[in-house]
Image 1: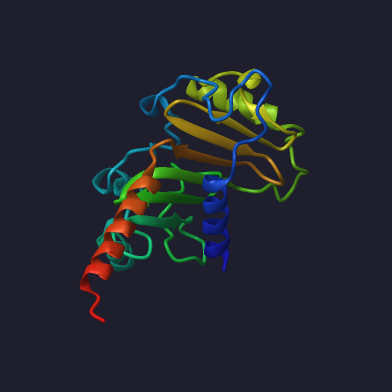
Image 2: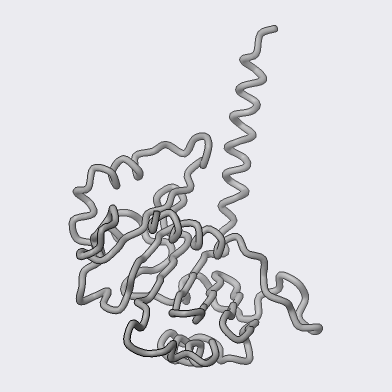
Length: 213
């Protein structure tokens, strides 16, 4: 159930519409010019990684038969190449417990959104704060840390509320959330949906061609 919740949250973050634009900012126009290659690399994970690259970050995952089965799925109906895998710390009770303690300290889960097994989205849920109140008064505090760490635009370039903010760049978008605990959703601007629609349409054409009344 926990894994399903994380995947649902990740999918919702990927498909959410952009936050309100300013009057002078045309809809869907990136507020920063950073390319995909300039997207944050969080704990060694970057957008565009292929399996031989990202599996190394999660020791033991390459030998997991269930993960192998996911990666071996052909790009056919119903998801046409879109896949999700969520990793958890080794001491959790979930399915894929391959987050190394040192490299991923302070993180509760990492979800990868894959298209043809290549990373197009990263969702990171950081650990909660069991012994203190939520230390984040405003998402701007988290923006400042991410901006300094990953050379991103400062707070003024983000579309933000109190607990949630989005930075839309030419090659990627980054959503930060501090509601109860920090979370980061990093997504490529690559339009994989166009390819999935093309694959679905090709299947439909095959189905129509094969029909015999």
